[in-house]
Length: 173
Image 1 (spheres, one colour):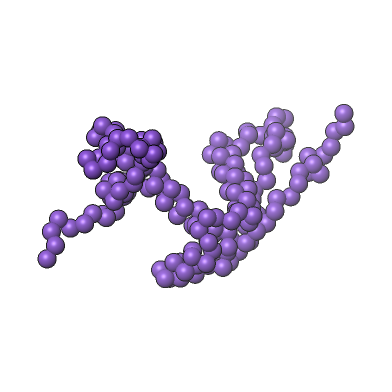
Image 2 (cartoon, helix red, strand yellow):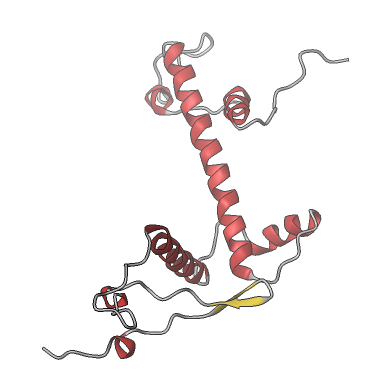
């Protein structure tokens, strides 16, 4: 087993542009950080818990931003660019746009999952899917029993949980 100098065993972290500057993540904390204090006999205090947590978060963010280079979100970049341009957001960093696109994708996915749950609750509360105008037998009857139909009421209820009002007015003029 060979011992190497701690400075030669660490690899340099990749630098990447964020905004107008270049961000280089902080080096990983290691056990070798406890060096003797100048003029002292013992090792210095290890990094504070908060500093270690910040260094870990920086490394995690750096790794996540590097993963966004290769990720292609479901929402195309052109659609994201269009809506960002409409609200006045200007940015040349593709990874940041992909991050916003990923957040929008998660938001839509959460709404769809909540609407599906509302539809399941509604169909279970009504006692099934039997309708007055459809016979209970026939070639499509077994298929209908497993199919969930998403209605505007389900979607409105799910959007209401996020503070979005999508209900029709109670009356029409």
